[in-house]
Image (cartoon, rainbow, N blue to C red):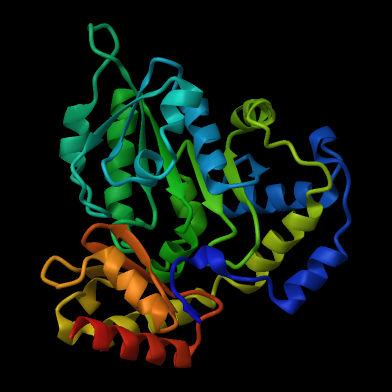
Length: 339
């Protein structure tokens, strides 16, 4: 099988498994796991923040962060196609009591003026805006990268209106490699970040909430309340640290393979290779005889697994376990199905 459904399907490499097996561990709920503590310090330093907190999943990390910056009854602004809106099962409302209002689905292309106009101040009958969330890179936006200049403009808007800014940075490592922006430059723009180790970096489990010491002290309480306190989790943290040390720069290989895949499928009119900048290849099936579910089923029968994201949008994701032969096979199968 060529598995292009997601970069979450990667398996730990032998060297990563060795790092996990030899990890020094303790009880992380008591703060005694040295491998977890070291990972948290390292990630906080990478983003230029004071502290970080290891969490079991990206969704939990996002939801912890949102509860830090938006009180119950407060409002979060986000894109209508944002992961925190679309794929986290209403957790902001259910777990945090947070009201969400969205701007139109534009992926990584943000209209900062439009977002500024949406902010509602306190003191009126409407729900006051507490925070803004953006996604870097953008999942349903085909792995698009929000330019640093745009994020700086958005930070200025947030400051002017005294609202917080959160980054769902599940694939921020890809933005870092694609645009060459230092992680600390991204970190300086956000009050909180949630960064994932189990997607393109190849770790089996884990994300981190990044923020101030005060935020992370509160985050530990929220994580415990949500059932996310783990014990000898240094075994998992060791995999994340190995991924950070060995798998970040190699993301450029995934980007190159994704572009080659897009170029191979471009004659079919389903993707613009110029818009494929990271490891995600979106397939626009609006003019195809097959919808996304039908295409995914037909491809699976031929040994290629892809994800149906929307009725007419399929997604291909290149990752650590995909090589050049897999790209050629996927291109061949999908060309037959879409021709």
